[in-house]
Structure formats: C-alpha cells, structure tokens
Image 1 (cartoon, rainbow, N blue to C red):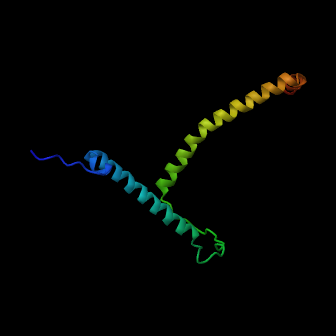
Image 2 (cartoon, rainbow, N blue to C red; image 1 turned 60 degrees about the vertical axis):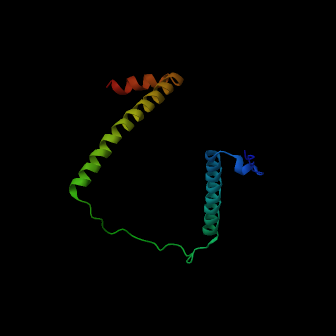
Length: 114
C-alpha cells in the first residue's frame, strides 16, 4: 500500500472553495487599489484651460406648449402643500404674538368696527 503524500504548504491543504474565496478577495483588493491609483492620477492632472467660463446670456428656449402646461400644473399642485404649511406657520406666529401682546387684540377689534 503506497504511503499518502502530504503537502508541505498550507495553501495546498485548503479546500477548493476557501482557496477560491481567498483568490477572489485578493483579486478585488488588487482591482480596488488599481482604481484608487487611477483616481489619484486623474485628480493630479490639472485642467488644460483653467480660465473661467465665459459669460452667457439665454436669448430663447424652445419648449412645446403641452410640456410647459404640464410643468406649470405640476408646479401649482406642488405649491398647495407649501401654502398650507406656510399658512399654519403664520397662524402660529399670530397666536404667539397675541399671547405676548394682548393689546393687539383690541387693535384688531378697532380695525374691524367702523
């Protein structure tokens, strides 16, 4: 009966799945280091023309009528909750001012009564 041969290194003794996992981790580490090195190289490169952008004036823009209508309707519907919140905040501010300055209530009554 032949004698079994044992590997002298730990690498050969590991199961195949563990070796694959280790190789995958090493490969990911190498790729990450390469990406970081590439990003560092890009960051070190200075722009060719560091001059400021020229001033521009918008003269005209072309938007189809239906798209503009839908955009404005969306803006109106988005403004409704904002107006509700703004109304509540102003009401709370008014209530706070009335509690701090009760003479404002008398002024309010004088304004309403002719």
